[in-house]
Length: 124
Image (tube, rainbow, N blue to C red):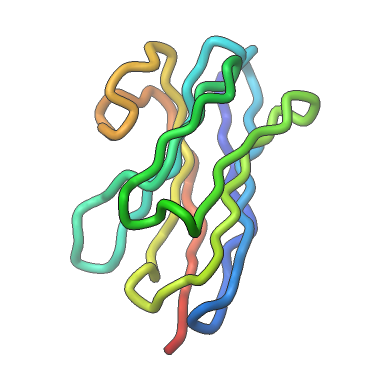
């Protein structure tokens, strides 16, 4: 049973920083691609970033390039999202997800497993 548990969300002022964590269990994730998505109130879910677990290759949405950094710690089976220079419009529930196929990493429907989400609120 794959479990993904996010943590690290909270309230931060605009231009502040937060680091999200996603603890993964129930599988060996070396062949997986892990991703971060977010859903703002009244909006569609959108891709934020992804990482191929074994190779460490990273992918980012254009809107977060240069401000967000995705990483993983193999020893802890944990993925991270360091978010800097946050904007009020990035207030959303942030979800981590995992897929085995490593295809179309920006498409949510390609992911097999999802966490419950963590709320990030950016105040202006």
